[in-house]
Image (cartoon, rainbow, N blue to C red; front, side):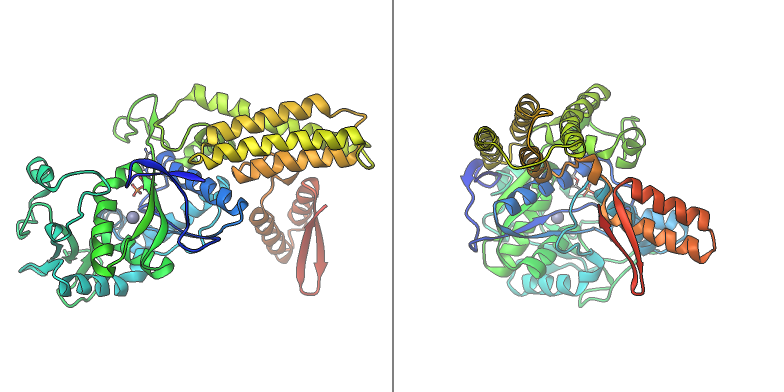
Length: 469
Ligand code: AMP
Ligand code: ZN
């Protein structure tokens, strides 16, 4: 498997630090609002990369954070007159709902910045002790950027160019910096802001330190993959490298993967310009599987344009696969039975070629666009070779193959299985509550609704058990 590494600007053979295991950190959203469709891109593409690596047999330890302390969160909290945590908890919950609707798997760990302040203080202290950070008069702790000789290696920027070109970095309120390039590790509290005790002042961490600390705590000093949107290359990821490598004395991440940006109608997404969509907005018009399909129909590193036409094309594309599976389900429900013929066995062998094609595309830096083409070819092959005369075993085998590849992409294409486990559990819970409230009509309605989806409920003494028919 080859991946494009932003560090070397080359496709490199992927060799994990530990055989059979992958440690992966993906920078997550700042939770002050519903996530927008741009935020959904890294979630979907790196979830697909994870699924593919799991399909290849790797055990993937996937960590993705929630940034839950930030100016925008604090501003919103003050506007609503509530604690910052009320805002962040609300939008973490909403984000998880969107992720589930997009069929993005939960991370192995979803740490929150505010739970990791102790670790941040520790790492900042290490950086001070090692001469990579200093405390200004007001208690702000700055990272001494020039002390890290390799600064700029990820973004391929030269420190001296940065110094002359990025004077804007020296913004008001940060005059105590020794150098324009130095960045904040810890800053003093301001009126109306949440704060924590620290050896330097009551205050809160800068943004970059949280990822260095959470990555170290949950994955170790050295990890395989660090990922996020391309806007994070500089300064966020560059600063993370400077912090982690100076503090730990080891190479932070072996492979740096970055997704391209999502634009709307060929323009930068912008709330003020009115071209801005949350994932929730899109869910009112489309099944979110269409959005997922749309994101995967381009290579993750390419810029991607979102438009009504392209979403319609994505809807039709997904529909082709779903219809292919519908046809197979129809045959299975209407008499396709028995073992495979010799000819069918040969066809199954031939169809394996599509799996190889799919794998070859994904092995080439997760080329989901070509991988989806391989699924289309497989569906076409199936439509050509499966008929009313086919054996049940052959129809099942073809269906399994389509579902295997679709599942690696996280695409739900079997309408019979469209309802997610957590949705079933949510409905069962609602049914229990309806029964308690003696609303038996609603309870029966839920049972029937689940039955229509092939979900069978069994009331036992230990509670309600369920299974798929
Ligand atoms: P943020 O909440 O802004 O820190 O963003 C969370 C993640 O979404 C980061 O990995 C960003 O790089 C990514 N992201 C934000 N906007 C876009 C966009 N328009 N297209 C692609 N990725 C984006
Ligand atoms: Zn980060």
